[in-house]
Length: 606
Ligand code: F6R
Image (cartoon, rainbow, N blue to C red):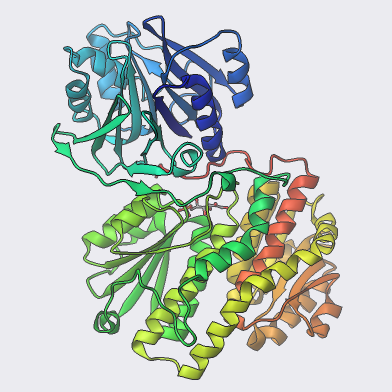
C-alpha cells in the first residue's frame, strides 16, 4: 500500500500512475487517484490491478497538474471501489489518501454522523475528509493541524482540495512519507523507491510533521503549526534499479544482484586486518561496558538476526538474546543502559520492529539499526545505523536484503570483537580475506541454476516440505522454508536436524521432500546421520554442502555443492540456491512470484 502526490507544471495523471506503479511492489488490492478538473475534484478508483485503473482513466482527457493517488491493502472494509482511496467529504471539496490506521475512527465517525455527515465507505480513512470539512473555515493548513490533533493512530496522508488548487498538504505519524523536490514541482511518496525516477532531492518527513506544497516549494510545520527547517537529502538510488530490466521477475533480478550488493555493502568497510565502521560512534569503553546484546526483527530480518546472535557470541563473547519484534515488548525484557539492542529491518518501517526499538530506547538501551533505507524511521531513531547497500528491494520475498543483513551482522560482530580484542589478529585477517571473496563465490552459484531447476521438480507437486540443518544451517533452513512458503504456498517447516526425531519425524513419508543443509564442519557427521535416519523412512532428500563432502552427497537424492568458505560465512552462500529453489517452484506452480497472495512488502501495522 502507498500514497503518492504530485503538484507542478506537468500533467498529473501520468506522473501519479507512474508513482503508483513504483509503489505497487508493496502489494495492493485496489487503487485510486484524485485530480482537479474544471474547478472540482475528479476521482477515479478501481479494484484489482493498476491497468484496470488506467483503462478507466483512458476514457477521458485530463489536464490537471495536481493530484493524489493511493494503492490500498484492505484493513477496514473489504477491497472494493467504495473503500478504495481517495475519500472525500460530503460535498466533494476535500480528498484524502492515507496509509496506516486511525485508531479512534469509530467514535469520530459516530460523532460526525450525528453532526449530519454522510459516509460512503467502511474505511477508517473516511473520517479525515469529513473532519476537515467540519472544521474548515478558509485556512486549509490550520484545519489539517486541528484534525491531526483529533485523530489517534498511524498515518502518511495527503490532502487535496478544490478550494486550494495550488496546494497539497501531507502529514505523517509512524508511517513513512518523503517529499521529492523537482524543478518547480514537488512529489510525495510513502516510499523512497517511487521518487528517484523524478528527482534525487528529497525531504524525509519526521513524525508529527506536515508538509505544505505550493508553487514548486515545500514548507514544513509541526502539528501546532510552528514552522520547521529541514535539510534536503540526496537519494543515492538510480531509477534503473527499480526496473525489472531483462529479468522475468524482480525476485530473480534481486537474487542475481546479490554478488554486486554484497560487494557494495562491504565497500569501504574492510581494511587488511580490521573492519572499519565509520558510522558507529561507540567507544571501546562503551562496548566493553555492554553485558548483553538483544536483537529484534521480524521475518527474514529475524532470520538474519539468528545468524548475528551466533557470530556475536562466538567472536565478541557477549551474551545475545533475540526476539521476534512483535513479541519483544510483551515478555518484559530485562533491558537497560548496559544492553546493546540491534534492530534489523530492510524497510526500516516495520511497525512491530519500530515499537520494539522505541521500547528498548525507553528502557535506556543503546540502539544500532541495520536497515536498507536511508532516512527510514529505524535509521532516524537508532543511535547508530549500519546501512545494507542492497538498493530497493521490490519483490515481496526478501532475498538480497537478507544476505546483506547477514554481512552487516558479520561486520558488526567483528567490530565488537575488535573493540574487545576477543579474537587473535591472525584470525581477523583470515576472516576479512574470506569475506572479500564472498561476492565472487556468490556468483559461482549461478552456474548451477539448471541443477536447482531440476531440484524444484522434487518439490513442485508437494503439499509439504521440511528444511533441516544444525547450528547456522538451521538458521538458514528457517529462511529457506519461509521463502518456499511465501512464494509457493507449500507448507514448509524448518527443523533443527537433531530435533526431528523428537516428534516431527512422524510426518515424514516416502513423498515428503526434505531440504538438508550440511555446511557446518563440526556438525557434519551428526547432520549426516540425521539425513540417514530420514532416508531410512523413504523421504526424498535434496542436499546442500561443500565440495568434497562426498559421504553426504552419496546419502541424498540430489546434491548441490557450494563454493567452500568458512563456517560463519556459509549462510550467505547457502541461502542463494534456496532462494532460487523457491523461485523455480513458484514459477512452476504458476504463482505471482513478485506479489504472493496476502503479503505486503512493508508491514506498517502491528
Ligand atoms: C519475507 C519478508 C518479511 C520481512 C519482514 C520484515 O520475505 O520479506 O518476512 O523480512 O516483514 O521486514 P523489514 O525487514 O522491512 O522490517
